[in-house]
Image (cartoon, rainbow, N blue to C red):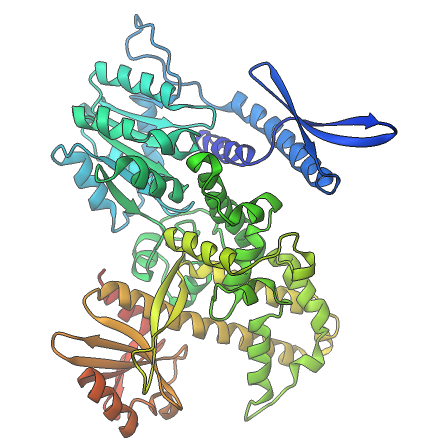
Length: 599
């Protein structure tokens, strides 16, 4: 394991340990009856808290897990590089935090010399090398979205003189604002001008004391960049402490054009399968994708998303801002709730979605379409053990049914989960309008990391391949069913991707799906200034078929649309084939279309 990987694993372990209870379980007998207590020793002072019997096994498992992680952490720390010594050998200052200076910065930047830069890089570059602003820069986003790489690329572009005045600090859970304040004071006295602080939200007192960085050091001329994966921690600190004294840059959303240009991987299907992180093994980056399997995707949801929410809420107002999510956090069921919403066809945040008996939407929709296939109809539900397949999918996705949940989930839980996932930029919304009442708008919720959603389809395919009844079908039939399932999912996801990226690239226009009594336009782009609109169909196909654009040439639908949204200036089908024109309808290649969008 390389030094950087050791440091990253240490940070990951410290994050996991911080969320698990310390101490041990004590048993006391009173009149022949056993009572259980959670025993914790802090600052040489021992406390014991009574535990309900039904929580003992769960708490014991969490404590044992913490001890296992602590043992692994100890072993890794022996392998970790020692902190950089003070700049002057005569200096007596000992760094409280892990500080990298001089030669260590060159080692830190060496691996990224050939990496291409994300589109947001100039924003960070201009802050670091631009005029003093009396503000701190906050670089935040989910894991594996390129935050540390962006910092390393800035360091790589520094002159020798600038690099000698730069420091990179990696925070650990044991660190405190008092310790980092002492280190920053020393660095300031030694003439350091550029300080990059990674994983700063790991500190328990960060949210409540974040103003230290802007009010004392940034205002004195030091350029400070804070980065971390706990996005909510930064959002809370902006609201509580930093106000207008910070520049925020969120890295979570990665559009298709960046997926192709930065990673060097082409094709909408590859983006559907792996999009969402910068860790897809490709031409320019060589890390394994977080969404390569349903297992790795579920682990990502747990570690990068659910624990992100848990960690930030734990330290915000001393845990007083959990609201209804505290129950789900305490019982370890927040990951299950998020997985349910991701799997739901419309990604609805409702009590029904979070509590009903689980049924795979991907399987149900594909089964219905196969049954009504014009050429070769097949009743797939008669060819599988539906209960066994569903159970296996649930296990792979860590999904619990109502009777398996220890918390009675209600609409408040659903609403608050949506709030936090929106703050994390994991979910975004696009309008859904209906004729004739276009003022009554609904919302389409889109998952911004497509690979996360597609990994669930992988879980369904894996479950079918393990089903004995399904394997009794011929190889041709099995392949046809699996292709149909994946094609259905890719089609819905490609539509969501186009809608979302078009909306983000056109902030001054209205981008929405428009439904009629019969049929719909997959996308409408309305310009309220010129009072014009463009209408689109989106198809996961490489073929040109007349039925694809039948709604676009429907005189009644077009007349209704023009009456409400102005003259139609273009009719398009976005698909995977080459650009062409048929019957006045322009066919646009989806990859070329997405690359043409500029946010």
